[in-house]
Image (cartoon, rainbow over all chains, first blue to last red; front, side, top):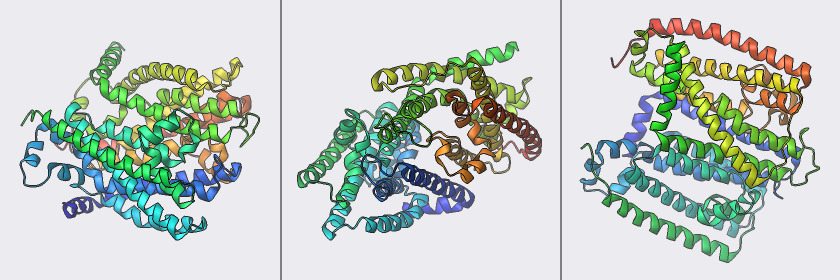
Length: 249
Length: 266
């Protein structure tokens, strides 16, 4: 499925180039903004320039990885509206797997190696220990699990309400609040972003782990949280399937 | 004139046909303001701090005004033009006794009115919740110049968007890609995320030669009184020059585009 998806993108090289340039420009503009902002202010919520850039890079890496894997979610609505989801559900393959991971995005895939290198480069400037690097990697995987749960929720909501486009963009807007450490947000928003909509656990916590700013109970709680949201999202998916009317098919 | 009034009324009513879409769009606007607000709030924790020539009240006024100004300048239905050209639906309009540009400008005005009403409501709630110190401009000359800059920004964005929407005349499947690039430039080079005067002077000077800063940044600079009357006139002159230049460019591209138009799908 991923090979087909890659071939489809490569068949339209101009479109591929335009979107790739757009994504790189957006990244560079934001990075430039952070650089000039921190040059003027020196710190942001107590974090130095390298730390703020590392938060931003961590956000981008998790966001781009999630988009790379879950691009098919953005194409889910027509399947539900037309009733073509029937054709997915009757096949001898998990329907959820097909609509969640059935169309990996080549454009995001191309951006991942440079992002990983930038993370490595800026991360080294923060002088982490091997343990902190290991914890960072584990928490990035944990963040990706939370992103998976978010996308399953969006798909399920799409079956019930037929609304996908804006819901997934609201998810993107929510996670983009993690471009900066959630410490910059005031209560109760900080609490909401940390516990209720775990953007903080998904994006801020991995970066903080590399800086040695997390506690063992906090890390354990974050693993428990991702297990809970994955469980809830799967239950919600099963519930949503019972509401699928197969209309128009 | 009467037919455009009818288009305005119908377009306004159409917005209510897709209420969920509209509400989601507004939620997204509010969330984007949250990011910018809390970022600058963190920078200006000390109320007496002065950074990049802004104090706390002026920068937070910039952020809150963005919500209102974006609803006026960036709310648009013209975004659908690229798709209509790509699908060959433009033919329907070419056969009707209406001016295509006026049709879309009228539709834009109707969605701007609705978005502005919601933005006023949202801003009021956010002001009550977040209690930012706001700067209120009381100089009538500056306010007048601000309104003129806003009107120019509306026309400027309409022209830029239309020019980018003509891309499918030549590349029918690339309409969205061209708009994607435009939106990135509008957000960053327009001052939608941060005021452009935090950038180095050389970069600022280069940006001020493009039309983007005259969409959001310059009107807000005029409102905040950072340009003075003379500086405001200079900004309005550049903005008006861009309107003139882009109008000529749009007409030329439209005429070339119609020659290339193949009405695919019709």
